[in-house]
Image (cartoon, rainbow, N blue to C red; front, side, top):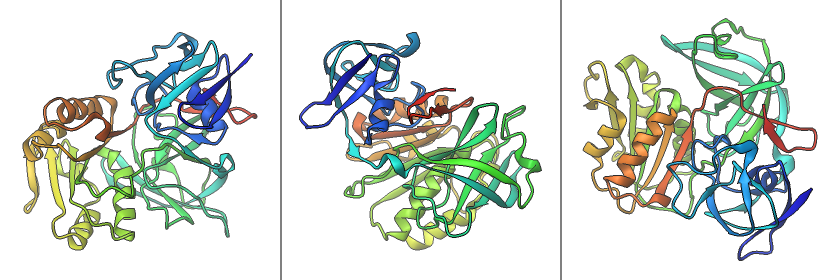
Length: 347
């Protein structure tokens, strides 16, 4: 059985099946709500149900700590009746924009003891359309996929760059060190809606943990290409300085924006000379270097625990408005698969 979902205050309506999440149904209909992980972790898709009844998808919780008291996670809500919803934002997208490619490994570089930068080339004459901050899925076989953020900016659309941390026994990451030039990978993109508001001029703080630097690099490179002028702070955390594996990119941004502020947050080790260094975690570095975040935007990219800590610090102690916090969580495990009808389902 299907139910009609409308967006309050608009003429938008789409069908949603009993066992389908509201988010998935919206995406299938070409309506993009804010989202990232699609697993009920990041909280980006939180919004209000104005009318109607919902239940947890497959019994899952419909709330997490990122939800305001009147919000539910649209990625975890399945309809029981017709609904009227009020997402934080929405936009029309072309459902056909998501494409599958067979990409070829062009370069595979070990840039830190546990991080590879993997550069992929698309077939001749083909280009990938995506927004800075979005991610792709790699088919790892057995009907499952893994998600990785694009680290390159959208204007570099004939190639894709991924930053991959080696996870012991990882379904894909464990294979990455052995990938050779010319090896083929089946990928699909784009996914995710952690993108910049191009109309905003508010100061922006990026907080990255480890390879959470990948979507941040895409976002900042895109800002550089478009010559965006706004105050920018980057807090990049790792255990030791070697974990900050792409320092030339930071130096390039500092040349373009003389006021660009970079903070190396190192929990176990010394910073390099010239760093605005902090000994400790990124959430503590945020409080120390950005104690007043009123009127700011914060983009946090990394593990769920890291993003949760940064959210608590930014909103709970530093005065950031909840709507100014944007999260891209790296959640290990299978991604969401897409059925033949185009509706994402749990892998």
